[in-house]
Length: 69
Image (tube, rainbow, N blue to C red; front, side, top):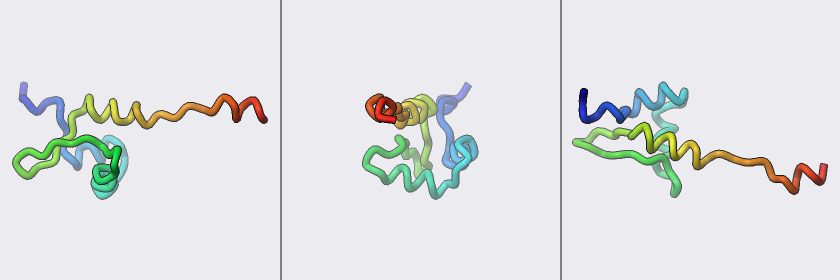
């Protein structure tokens, strides 16, 4: 067991999310961007933080919009 077991590096996360590494960099630079840790010049992503960030992006249908249709 490694202390970094709960972390992914940039290439691994990009592959998991099926996006480019450049997209991850873009997401990091947004005000509500993807959380990351810089450790010894490496960028790492904690899996639980990424899950929470994704859940925070969840959209719900507008109930008023549904009634108007």
